[in-house]
Length: 474
Image 1 (cartoon, rainbow, N blue to C red):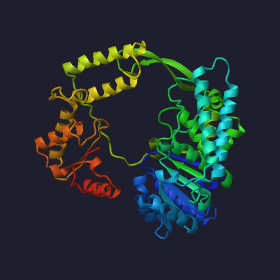
Image 2 (image 1 turned 45 degrees about the vertical axis):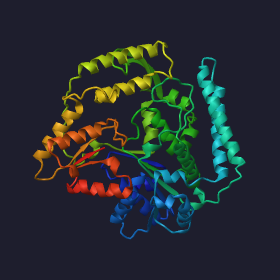
Image 3 (image 1 turned 90 degrees about the vertical axis):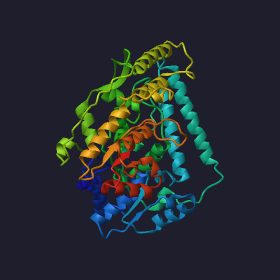
Image 4 (image 1 turned 90 degrees about the horizontal axis):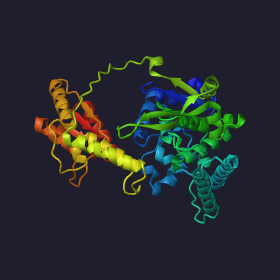
């Protein structure tokens, strides 16, 4: 993988978790500097991992001269000074957090050129639209174009020009992005509508990164960007196109595939099939971008940038996983409420209810809450002795008792009903209370939410590793 980064163009390290992406990137950055292929690398990692990355880098290269950003460095008062240090120092690498990258702006001229290019792309796309294109799509794209034109005007007559160091002035000529899947929401113009996985929303951090990738492509001839992620494509095939735009924009331009509709019509087909309704009471027709044409050609283009290593290819030493599915029966109240959700969904689908009063998103959310605990829908309902929280607590207690000798730790994941301080019902508090009732000491149970700062998180994780905190909920 290191050789590929050094001798190839822009690279995507699509390596499974545990394959050693951190060391790969550190080695690539140091070797590129040693061979004179780059002068300064910028490594962008999740915010809470900057210091851990710094420590691991120095394990591999104890003599490396690296600059690691902390949260304080990017506070408004210190940002200018820190960017000045990056620009003037001769570092092997600079490690910053995801949110900090966005705070280093490109020059106004380059931003204006990028916005103008986006406006031109939309104009081209609008010109390709025919009479059959839904009016909604055309209006949506015209609205996007208007928004971009407004941003361009604002940029051109921005009187409060900040004298902050721009990205171009940092002297960065190699960019490494860890956990690159966090930047998947890149703007997308298409006449396809209601196709699952083809969203036309954008995150500002994604368009900012895209502009920086374009700048580095100009500077290095398409050799200056390295992405790393274990999940390059997780939800839809449009994500493959997004990754190609970041890393292989020149290749897409040469082949006339820069617009999504051109790419989609060359490599894919939109198919409509029957699938289960979200509320689980029947079936519906759903359109998805799912079937592929010219797959060998697509894979050949994709492999020009992607270095793919899956779990089967690497055969990493991982523990055997033992899955146990505990089936919990619904209460009579839950059964009645599920039937009610079905009726609500039918009313929404038939257009009998105003979307501001009730809609599918609200119904599926209520369904998720109901499946977890009936008290999330109505706190006045009784506690079910056989609820998911109760069964979970029993299992956790049993493992806690059985592994007392080696102080084994357990993690409980729950993405709904996180703890609040306002006294409202929460499944976290419910499990916590049940574990205390069963006899687990309070100091051995922790919520991740209580570790507010990076220092507190580090301290908590150390306690979990040492077996002082034996149950962590998050």
